Length: 61
Image 1 (cartoon, rainbow, N blue to C red):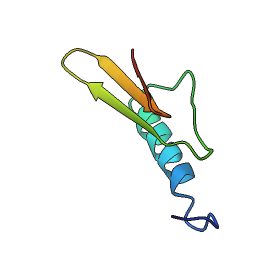
Image 2: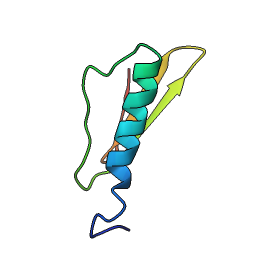
Image 3: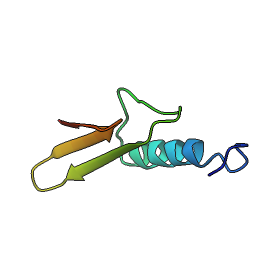
Image 4: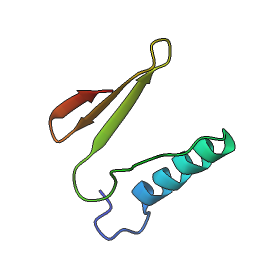
């Protein structure tokens, strides 16, 4: 992928998500970013259930 950090895609994604939340008058209360472990967050809009997958584990919130 981007071993030299030229594109800083992760940082750009975090800033974009924060900007979208801010424009919606929302904000994050915590974050888990960086490092070498990927994370996936899914939100089921109809139920409000959020699923977080990281390091082979899955949590439902």
